[in-house]
Image (cartoon, rainbow, N blue to C red; front, side):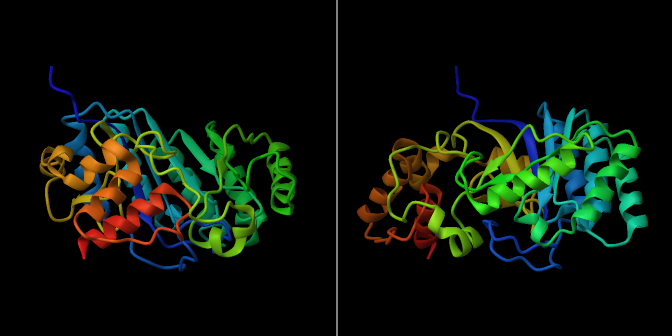
Length: 311
């Protein structure tokens, strides 16, 4: 039996890389408050096309701050609901305007769109920029509309139990939300990248100390490159599995997916067989030398090598 390489079960949309925060832990660096956003009609059409072929179970929108473009977010989720996608979620810092009436109308629209899970980024890093009184107003507005799937989703430095001033402040903030019935069952551990390296570097192991033999699918937040179950769409329309494999503004999404063949790419083959270390060996075999001593993760190594191979 032939292996099923692509069976899409999850779609993720990066609505925008614009953000209302410049968090010290952000892996993307300091983002601007305005920027490119995903084309709503292209996203809606893409959802319809993908669900016409695949039994998609979940869809998530995030950013940046996705609710800077709340209308687009709601169009995406209402389309996903109508196409039979059951689990619809948003990651947001809850700060997208200072207008309390707009906050209330966005909360009402989100509830009407079918979203059933909201991860509210609450921690020392976000609250340096996202005023807690406005985030609480957004949270209360959701609760007033009967929304049941709201939870606080903090980012921990080192781990939840590490004693540092950021974690201590995060615990204080979470209690404020816990006291109004918003629990925090899940969380993220901050990984080195972007602002996190710049501002929090002392909390991470030094760069270069990485096990490069671990293949994609075993590294956190990755999947096997020949077992594609999730896709991500960038604000510019790029369809990413790990790297971009096409653009939904230029080509039909099913054509892009049908054309994906990891076995036809020597770079992907090297990654699948030997992880980032295998990719590094492949690059050397064709005369491309890449200095990876400044990399904190195997994903950083991979991206740096892939960039060098494209030059």
